[in-house]
Length: 430
Image (tube, rainbow, N blue to C red; front, side, top):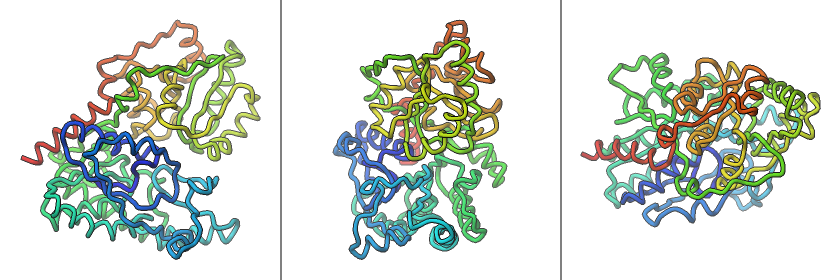
């Protein structure tokens, strides 16, 4: 398994590979995970590493971030990682690393230089260059016959392609995003973007199997690259860890609440807050909107909406916390909240949505009419699709009940995800 995002890192990009390795090992597979030696940008939860079986062997290959921070640390400078400094610098879940090196014109110039010349195809190329030879030796010494890469970042595709050619092994290229389709994942530099697109196209055409966490990727990649009907992108949703679901006890709060989990994006705007404000005014003044995620990002992005709409007593922000604790808040809520807006992110199966479905909770969904989220929530029978405050009020009053389809929701368990991947791995092994 090739990924720079792995335990003890504890952000959304980690859990697909983490759960897959955990449950494959339980089924008897020997899993070698090659990841980074230094985590520059993310919170950590040591319990994630401790819960992995012995058959999951983690190999940490040296990684020097191609930034001033990375160079300073490589030459013996003080630890400037996010974990050590708890810097409020925004970090995108895609792995878009932005070092804090000042403000104003210098900061803009520095970021321009990084993204135009040093993040090609992404900040992990320095790690990928070292990991290729390390992985080739590992494949030979351990007699490995399958390699699984997960992207973002693009650099994992370089490693997968290299191993397939050099070691003559089967390659499964997994996409958590349709990479160059999403503007948040692409470079502003035309030169770097050209390299990114070539890597994506190469993987789609040469990997033995391509998988994705959203069924929409099939359509997107056919439009973008003209893939043939025979070249299928297998839809395998990320699953909630079965161990976390068993015997889960909801958090008991002194007020009813709905909960949003994750990083609030600026694209969401304040449309949902206006709807929630109407709910509070009309019928549920004691209802709280609980937001769990990176406080330095969420508080900054929602501050104006909370102030302008008079919601300071109705919106509660909590900082990043371990996944098990997050789930207790989710199952204790009246409903979970998904609020991409009516015109954004139609194509994705959000990490938070896979958790909501796997936990079998009702989901207040402010999403596009045509979207992956709406399709999957409809299949799971757990969606409350919102156009106005009345849609939420109807649910809260019990006149619009939601009973999730337990059988379909099981598709969103880690054990189900593992079974789907295992079938692919076994077919390739034969």
